[in-house]
Length: 440
Image (cartoon, rainbow, N blue to C red; front, top):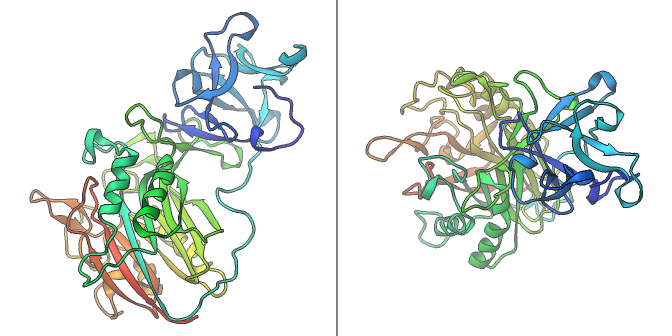
């Protein structure tokens, strides 16, 4: 790797990743898909040289980011975790080695300082296309927290492989309780691994005979020490744990949408800095949201996975209340002619739920959402309780005890709603909704 370009293209763009909760980061090349690696097995003038060739994040791919804000906006130094030396631009070298990057310095000078140049939000640029349909219609929605990363209560060996995950999604694709097959038009996924997007997309196309795209947005961590953040709020994407020795990319949320979708955008919701009720010395996940526009349905869809409650990040619900307001704001920003549909694992007990709340003192996070939108379980009656069938937290009999998964739509719609019979290899039941949308 050399510092030689005067403009930014695919070869110059990197995404920041972490499997150490943001204490250390790795740089993944957009051009190669591989991680920048300090080659400590090389010798002489090439010891510690940087190459974008790492297939996963090991010691040679990890770096500490040190803010050098006193030297200039967005300036940082990168120190290799493997040899405790700073990455240096070999500006004095000649020929092909000129400006080569090497992890070899014990001090920081101008050759060791780099400026982070943000390249915009995840997603597409520009605006949404005009909707091609605005007539009264039905939209079939499915949401499932697939628990794909490394939860000991889920999957074989605690994590999902691409083939295993794809097969279970296909097995539960048809909405239960209907006298004919009802397949989803859009699917919300949470706890999803980035590199599963294409296999799931392929499986959906084979099963439905329709073309799909699976969009993704990562859960992130603040970079550096607890309570500190880099200038500009730069964060690193949380990595899924390896499965079967394979890198599965970042961890986050996904939307499976028709291939006609051309506009989507990822967001980071305000989240606690630390795990307030679990271990306040450890950093908390910065939670994502993801939105996309479906012109043929005239629908603007969003999904999210909120902070967890008692025993985790947000014991009193203050951040989940903020996240609910932010997600509703993203829904309210639906382009002209589009109708908003949103939901996912919102980690919040329904306001009128009579089930087990797990000691979670917060039942109010979604009150404003219910006041502005209709939830799946309310069917055709807005005066029905703000609750519904449980979707998570198994009791000793293997039954769900809490509703924390939701699908919301405009108040002038109506729903039929269903919950899967089992969790499959996840720890969440799947929620299904058919929405009767009025004309725009």
